[in-house]
Length: 306
Image 1 (tube, rainbow, N blue to C red):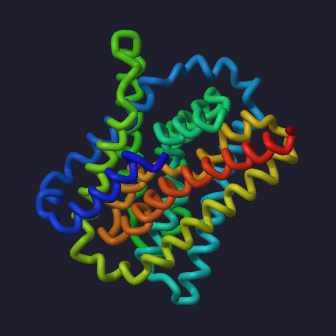
Image 2: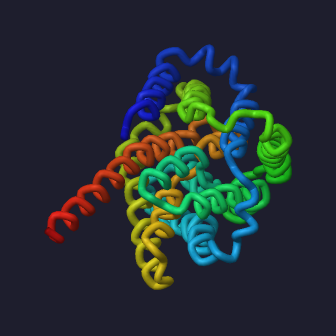
């Protein structure tokens, strides 16, 4: 379950570190690449899922609250505490805030929802809603948290995110009937790999400002994911969600749209991209581990029944 995504990630980072010049030259195409990712995701979405909204309301609301309330607050509280204790620097703090404020990832979460037996309609509803609302919500969070510290153009951020998201969504709706939905799922990972290569290439010269925080960033990423899953577990049990409803939102809850995060960090110093990239690597490693643990538990329960 680790496979191609992890190979692409590692290759992209190595290329960015050792061959940064070409990545810098092609960096203007990042918004286009992000639009391609949005298109590849939404071309597979049947927007009729919104007709079933009431049937999916409880798990959807829990997933939405986790994405745009619990996680941003968690990331902010931990980040500002570490900053005050001088355990992290300011660029890393911004990277944490941006990672917490972006919407859910699309392709990866759908894959895991299917693999874990989740109700894909819920995952789709959650992904589409968080992505469509992100041009408004993400800049707002960043403005509220960072406005007293740095001058960030949230209006420009809103416009860029809106164009990057809404245009490919509109195109996907128009061409959906004529365009095949059976696109190779690895295509999204290749596009994401190019984005990571460009991001690393642009920040490699100033990597010394954040590279000492590598192990702390790995620990923080794992901590955020585990705490998020614990939160989801507690409240999904309180809401008495079914197993398939839980699995529809568990991995999507912490699977952040890092390609959009990389777009957002372009408004800041290059080294800000460090934490989102580390987080992306860890989420790609953590999900297969979660999957294998679930399989092991099911096998143990099956054996106990006999």
